Amino acid sequence: MAEVKYVFVTGGVTSSLGKGIISASLAKLLQSRGYSVTIQKLDPYINVDPGTLNPYEHGECYVTLDGAETDLDLGHYERFLNVPTSQANNVTTGRIYQSVINKERKGDYLGKTVQVIPHITDEIKRRIKLVSSGNKYDIVLTEIGGTVGDIESLPYIESVRQLKWELGAQNCLVIHLTLVPYLSSTGESKTKPTQHSVKELLETGIQPDILVLRTDRHLNTDLKRKVALFCNVEENAVIESVDVSTIYEVPIKMHEQGLDKTVLRKLALSDENEPKLDEWREFLTKLKNPKNSIKVGIVGKYVELPDAYKSIAESFIHSGAMNECEIDIEYIHSEDITESNMTDRLSGLNGILVAPGFGSRGIEGKVLTARFARENNIPFFGICLGMQCAVIEFARNVLKLDGAHSTEINHKTKYPVIDLMEEQKSISDKGGTMRLGGYKCVISKGSKAFEAYGKTDIIERHRHRYEFNDKYLHDFEKNGMLAVGKNPESGLVEIMELKDHKWFIGVQFHPEYSSTVVNPHPLFLSFVKACMS
Ligand code: GLN
Image: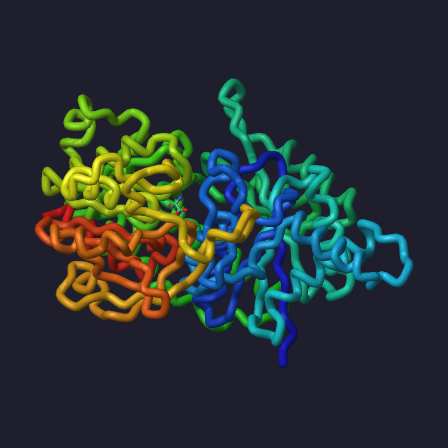
């Protein structure tokens, strides 16, 4: 069996250049040429996973089907490649140290002094190879988080150097992403930061094979030649990545400059099969030529940082394109919504999505939003905490259970319509202990959810501790809010839906994690349709 090939993507000059998008785009191109590809992200922070991070710190926490709480870049990987990632696709420094320290405590190092080199770097290399164990993939792309030169990234960079040496140039290559800023005072694009960044990489023993230059305007051939000469790379291995209107255009831009061809040639792989990108291009055409437009409000408490709702925003892009509809998203701070201003703030929207979240801040604004949508027959989509808020609202205002709440917010409420799941009651650790990953759900025929999915048996990803309190189900259903989706094993309520409403669905799971370009999520598709009509 052919050996697995490794491609590493590092970043220089500054963070936020879009390594994740470049990695996902290259992976898409290689996949569309018939190679099996996966992408892995190595994060330099000490948290064991990003599950314990506040979204303000690091944007959304993405959840894989196998229940890993991961970096939001994994969402991009799945949206581009349309194949699930797993626990092994995201590794943090915290996780690396945790395994090394656990081994040390077990005595596995046989009296040796445990050090960054070789023990930490060996563990990093083991994790890199683990993704493709059993030669599952032809090519593994590994994105190194952070910026070259950061103290925290050093063990990762050193591991890449070692792997390059161990595996040989044809099995392992490094793509370095940098920034070429434009100075308006002199009217020039400057290459010096790139030169310095490559020098920094060279000091660690790595000669990058390919350079991708982020820029806000086209770079001329002379400039690219200069970068090639000064940075010691082939001329056709200097690729520009000019700002584009949508991230989904990046694969096309990279292909036009032959990034995929250069990578395959360097890895001694065949470039005979041209990439099959028809479906992708069709999506782009639809995305860029909408026939309708709608305005959807996303009500949440992290709206200052739209990355906190990345997967939701991307799901709207997928479902909007499929419906040939432009979706203008208005992010609305749930703390800003009050009884007196809600009509002002929320009318004019074609649909409202109440976002997931934790804790009490902004909760009443979400509850009010659910009421406004219910009373005014506005399409409403509640995700996780969003569903729980719709339940709380219905209990208070329709069932007249005064002060009904979730015990997450008020543990003394007289009417705990949302309560801690039984298996959560004995858990005190916060990291990795929620109900996580894919769980089955059976949908009732005749419901709007069933209409959207077109089937009864689904699997959706979860990330929560609280659930709908079954004790109240009879009352809810009698009054028109139905549990139309349930877990077949535990009986947990997964989907709530209003009977007499245009489109009012709350889901305990996170549909946004599984929407991709070629497979927009059915609930988003159906919600957008409802908003359009
Ligand atoms: N905080 C709620 C819970 O734990 C909802 C979580 C979420 O929205 N992801 O159940």
